[in-house]
Image (cartoon, rainbow, N blue to C red):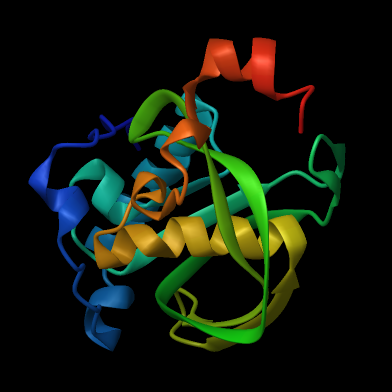
Length: 179
């Protein structure tokens, strides 16, 4: 297990589509080690999600570990540490809402991004078993954000109003209360 360096916006791996994993790869020791490294890295950096491309591994693999309970985004449903392999998202309702997103690969910034708020996620776990989740609200936003990394997208690409991008300190001082 090791904490890996998270690559930042500008690194070419963050802009390429990650490749799918085969069943043999999913069950391999190499992927088990990678997932352990991702967990260590996520916890060390203090995030709630991490995609393999963020540690320069262009694979369709992401982890989410989201504490539940009250937050500035409302009452959030907990998502215990879960591994998602080759995930796919289906939008169930196109109604959109905006959240101020941040990203470990875009440190120090926050941006308002509007995303669909009702989705279905299909993926495999590390035993190659299919999983399916239906998510709404902030949870739907988190999953879309993480899985965007697998397609070479960053949240900054989705900001519709350039004035809705701010450094975290200014966001906390001037924008958090306004929203």
